[in-house]
Length: 392
Ligand SMILES: *Cc1c(COP(=O)(O)O)cnc(C)c1O
Image 1 (cartoon, rainbow, N blue to C red):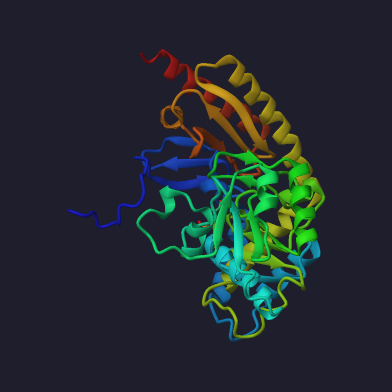
Image 2: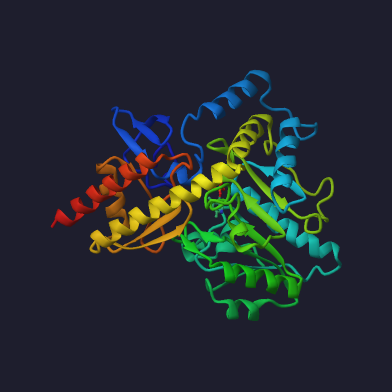
């Protein structure tokens, strides 16, 4: 008999009832160190008092109106994002998937309005993840995500990750845009080196191709810059944001240059909930905290500390771990042992990590994690590794 919850998830037998900063408290009272943060969502930790205050204050005044009317919280958040990034304009969504939908629509409408409707093809990358909508799975293209869901949305191709020559040969007179995660998250914390992101920008400039960056997972301070592409000193034309920007409240956004967004006039796109007062009140509080030099410098410093400790862990347990990957507080451990064994041993030792492709476990803690909590995470991962080694 089918369960009352559609069984599309493989859920761990854990039931958290409360959160405090970097900690999740299970129903039976056990405290877990949360190095997953709801997959890079709880960017400022659980029950952060600043976010709780922003949410409750807004909740007491007004939850929802409609995008038929002006929404001052949304205007504020857009103004701040524009001030802090490459973007000239912002559209708010509830999720990363919806950001993907708009990014694709925006790129296609751009070329349609330029009188080149044949330029509708979007180049994506093997191992990528852009969400579970029809456009999102067509972009990722993997059998795992697309099998059985055909006919797929046409106009997407996938090229090998990090193969710049293959990429250049696929850009044709039909290419509208290239979509890429500066750091693949689900794909296994695979960082695109800065020089390849720069090359990609140059290729897009030379061929008039729109560059769409999916910073849903790697953005919002995760790498120690507000957005990951800042490390390469380049800017996209269109960028998808979600996860960390809401700190746990559903919120996403598409940021774009004036040029890239030029075809999106009134009536071309919309959302009932996107950018509602509750989400934007929280988003404003999150952005104000993260888009701050001292805060981002701390993320960089803690990243160095964590990386160094993880290198030590890998060296001490070559039977379990192979290498450390990632940037900032978006780190991955490529495992020698099956990654789910490591994650389950982590649960036994009350630490939460998140699986990814390529036999990787992801460490995506709240950006507010303390030095002592980083040390505690290493201790617990050490115990988990020793436990697996000791099991015949
Ligand atoms: C999570 C994620 C998405 C999808 O976001 P949802 O909010 O789950 O729809 C898209 N792209 C990337 C890179 C992601 O990590």
